[in-house]
Image 1: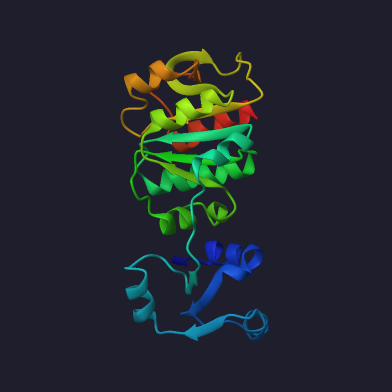
Image 2: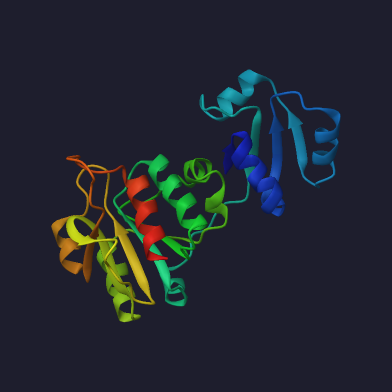
Length: 225
């Protein structure tokens, strides 16, 4: 799989050097930086700008592209070992998923469950999470009800972001807890809401509809950790 952009590639260089197969450079580096890269043990190829653009299908590579070993999602039984997980219910925007993974990794979430997408674009997820997806355990389960049932059987309390939920500032949380976040347009479906133990919300200071799911998710994670 390919990742690109200076920040995601350097994240991989610093933390997951063993995953890198080939580093493609489409820009000149100073001698010290290039010499350091040459000592890292993977192949380095200099390529023209046009070739780089073709590889990333027009994305903003900033001169850095890396071929890395494939990410293999965890199986759902891994979640039983966790105390704090976040479930993404039919969130389809890879930018939002990446942002949520980055926040989750920073705020102590132990696993992210991606539901409702058969094959999420993990290359885009790594890029939009600035590389944090390489460290955050990811579980991909198509049917959210399966994973909610499994977590409840393992002693988890299930919290979900809903418009009319309990004020997050007044809520208390179980030691084993899961936060469910709904998609960008419709939020959580009625059936998912019925499966929640507690609905939670972020009160708005002004007459305003809602926050972007990436922003709202980060606020809720911070309150729940």
